[in-house]
Amino acid sequence: MTASVAVHFLLVRVTMTASWICSSYESLRLSNSLVWWDLKLVALSVQSYTGENGEYT
Image (cartoon, rainbow, N blue to C red; front, side):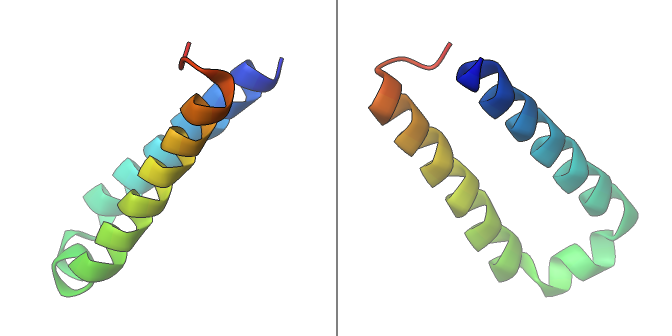
């Protein structure tokens, strides 16, 4: 159950981020460092999740 919730959250987050990128490409160019940190946080979340549960399924 926890795994499916985490996967659902990540899919929603990725969809939201993709939508934001598509709708604000100019803003993305101006705030690429903010996006970089956002992606790093997502990557750390995935790494933390896989580290706790052994394998991401």
